[in-house]
Image (cartoon, rainbow, N blue to C red; front, side, top):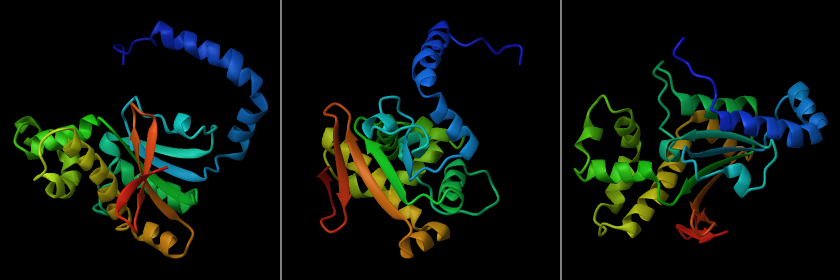
Length: 216
């Protein structure tokens, strides 16, 4: 632990700025959140990518969204094998304890994780095939999606198609969790898939009847 370093100066300065402004002006709200606990209306499953900020996109306040982030916003299938499962644990807590009424899978353009899956599955990234690669084994979740786009010409259109497949694969896997399916079937939970075009600031929502992602 003696190797742990202090926070960078810029982070310390920004913290003091936040505490002197936003926190100072909203003390009652923050104390209410602390004392009464969280009551988020939705769970957002998004990518770790620093360019994608769900709270900014939707203008959300603290306490409004329960957010889980991972590489390529993937949801693995239900697998109760007694091993640690971070995404599955977050999902279980959101649905069974917090009783969220919406679960939103938020994908995005220019996703590095999805590109890694494309490279791995097409033989261009053999290092990701190694059993020791955490990224590679995580991106195995997306292999069914790759099978649906592998015959497309390489390029931006194929990448975007696989980014959207990451959302669809995750939506399918969500329903393998018994507590998610039960809540959905009871009308207590709705599932949503959206894709964010970072450069254009645009959102596209999956429309089941058409099978397409339509502008929001």
